[in-house]
Image 1 (cartoon, rainbow, N blue to C red):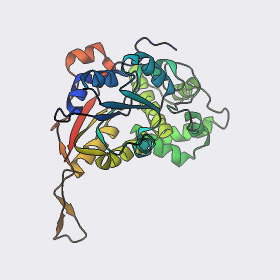
Image 2: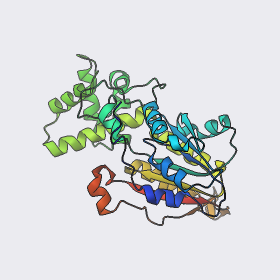
Image 3: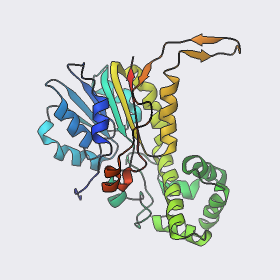
Image 4: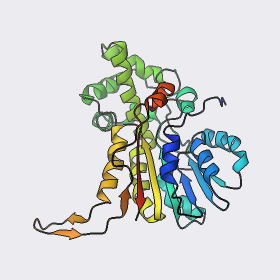
Length: 312
């Protein structure tokens, strides 16, 4: 496995600064998307004796790399090959009742794009896209078995593709002749069906691959699940920090934070709103975005948005 530049962390110092509540003497923090381990590494450096990180990743390659890279902090880290969407189950298995913080970097790692199967349309590899190899559904399964309306829904909802019906129909007709097996099978279809210049072609393929990846890995459902559970699993004063990379993820985080700061909830009576206790305090009035220098050094960071909140 190549280890150079496994993953370049985005908004690293900002994320960890928001994540750690200095008023706590001891921490149990969950890094739900360990990747190459950069977030976990900085968290451990800031920890006092007795604190702990639960480092989770669906990608076993990421965990193996992080374990090797973070050997100096073995006494502070527990590595888990799992899905952050099942955080409650993971913490029960670790005999943990409460945590003091949760951080998620929702972006793809450089390793996934450059070395794993199906994530990039720039390389001809099997259409897999599973970050968690224990899952069964692959991108090729979707392309070869979904009905036209199901395909259209995936591309419209997760890729925000206009006229997704045309794309779904083209896939449906193509697979009658040849099944989709590799990334270039899909790229070839797009080149046959659409007349696009290079820039528009890359943008279009990026949306298609994003939609398939989200569906394969249940990314939005997992994000919604972990946010919902975080309210109960993080102790008062604990922090939630999320770095997202596209509007679908950011909208989920933004709406979740907003809903849980409300003091009144609408009821079936149009003249009466129920008073409720806010569950969180938002720490970022506007999302934090990378500065010019970070984007220059890591162009993939340009769409990143960081939102943070504290449990109250």
